[in-house]
Image 1 (cartoon, one colour):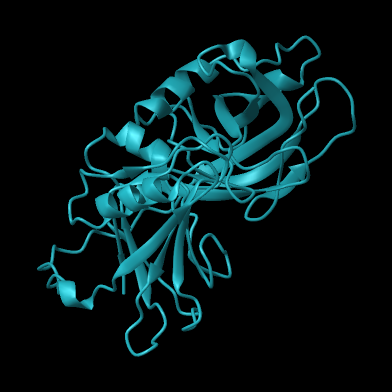
Image 2 (cartoon, one colour):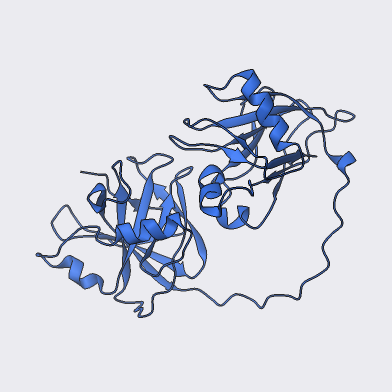
Length: 306
């Protein structure tokens, strides 16, 4: 059977049980209507695994001896996530660095005492076959989030940075299975100023792209900006970049100092993602973009280092 799903902060254990039928460990509380990062604790899961959270109007039915403990409804939630459509039926998340970023949409009829989300894990080869989803012994309890502050009036956009501020990149390298020529073509596409001519890796485990920075006056890297490809549909671009991280090191692919990440799609889709590299030193002359997970393809439109 698949391992149980256990959560750490910000969720807290609400109720636990022994190994007996019709019993669930309960965690709370996840806010509704806002994006939330949940932390997994314990063994049994790795980066790239998928979790489905299915809305249950009345959790009491799950504790009955004859309850149907399955993942009915997982197909609808998976399909909605693939086409980037929000649904109150539940949500889907991919594990990255033992965390899952998800947004729980408020259901029409929600009872903070009786409602919950049952947690299912995907353990097959066909995401559209509900028999490939397995229910865990965990329930996530939810509550309404505080209303967001009013949106400030739009301000004039900041002046565009001058091209002279960007640092030159050279000597590109990529993860296992990519030649130097492949990496050089990748670099050319992600530094041409056009996010539609994106670089795309082969499918791999934890694919990464590195390039050497030409530092001015031996000053360390200050920031890295990554832009998603704008040629593909958002649902496809999301697969290629959701959860990416930015690192610097003394050689290609080295993760010596983390600048930022994992970055959620909700941030990536809004435009270029800029992360500071406050802890970088002048010896860290390689910038690495990595997409954690198994059987992943890394692709993005532009990179700019300052």
